[in-house]
Image 1 (tube, rainbow, N blue to C red):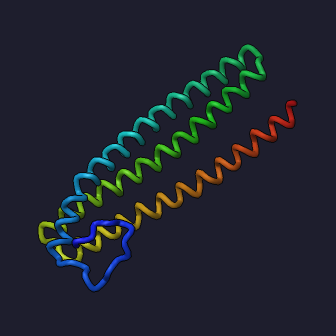
Image 2: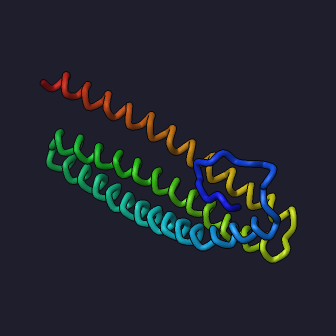
Length: 159
């Protein structure tokens, strides 16, 4: 593998030996652990933050209902919806972190003689990671487009 340029066309005739593949997997493993750990940590923090925001929205809505404030109830409902959004994104980050971390573990199985079953497990977790990431990106695009249309709608409605 003399050419390290990632934009160079792949030459399937010079695909390397099994030892070279294992060496590349060995180099990739600590990065998978790092990124998986960061994704798990970020997802857990987002989930905890969303629980706090959701509790604030519910408590604020209950307090505003007691004093008869309509605008405060609307604000609390919006805060609760934002908390729900953060909770869903946090759950997606937790799933992504889990799949990345499991890829690192599967590389360890491949390196230490797991054979084709361990390699299949590695590719299965990679498939789940990319499928989950793709679904997350599509959901975020739909949510952001909906948010933009809602902002313009509220702007026109209240101007």
